[in-house]
Image (cartoon, rainbow, N blue to C red; front, side):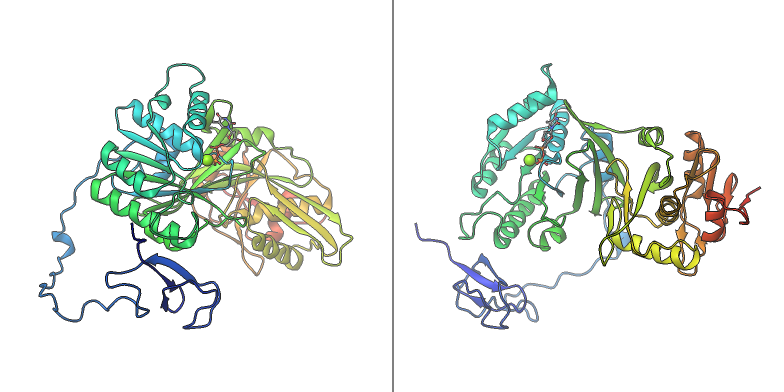
Length: 469
Ligand code: TYD
Ligand code: MG
């Protein structure tokens, strides 16, 4: 059989060439040529002809439709039976949609998708698990572990251990599942391209072919994707644009907690996050995370409880800081569970407006439990934890929590959903919550960082914060 023709197109300038070159002959950029299927007409170095701009084929232009006349049909979502996953998806999987699930190796992507398919099979949906990474036997061993010996639908999921895209598409056509998992998009390979599995051209081709197929037959597809060392999804960015939903599964391998976030969702909010714990029998949803984190909080110098919002849910987490003299010319700033720039900003504000200077000291900050906090309300917790660590004094008084964003002039700024944060804190016995002005009934309101510091870490001569009426 003649080898199908492919061309190499520069991802920067669009120059095309029949052969791969390290340097683009069009714009001179390095490593930008990506292999693609040749358009009909062959690889002649001129690229595809321009479309539109005339009625060469005599096709009538399609008239646009006013939005209110567009038919809207209520789609019935497929419930995976994993509450946290369904919530992050926006209420379940949408038929004909593509969901990309990214995460580092060993985080639990295969486990999560196995469990979801098992539940769907258990509720009578046709499913298919395509494993391009593990053998069918390995997948079975995992499913057995998930079922822990008892009768379980995870073992009813048909598995196909295959790396060839065409074979997978044929099998999908023959088996006609409602939901399918591709584990993973980087290990599937399209035979028409010469690049190895996982290369930019291959990943793009595989994802595009699966998308066309899924949309045409209304199959919900979950693509498992690898992430690179710095946490980004491996492969071309176009993959993220192509799919309907991008989910990120994160956490530390050594710790049991795993967090599922939506980075993109065409069918729901990207604010939602789900929390899981990896146990012997698979992933278990963590529904009482606040209770656990509050119970585990040390309340030692450097520890403070933050009343955070995880999407639409309040979550109490412990933020810990350690401040120690540094032997380095440039002291270390190490963070886990939050943005490093956020710490730099808070340290600058602390120094300027809180009279807490940590120059010459290493500063380590950790959100306990492997949770990631990405909301502005974390600022005050960071500042109080660092100040408490620097002074060697525990946050005093009754069990406390805090939240609030810090402004560059040292003011404490209002953040969203104060009432829900306060309720959550009260529900777990933390009555004394230091919060920005306007947070409402029950908060110990502080208009500035200085007043918040005085309330949390009183020193002689400082003015206490006002309790809101
Ligand atoms: P896995 O889903 O294979 O991760 P990924 O597909 O993201 O690479 O799961 C990896 C880890 O989870 C593995 O180290 C073992 C652990 N694990 C459990 O602790 N309990 C279980 O029931 C299962 C299935 C896995
Ligand atoms: Mg896996």
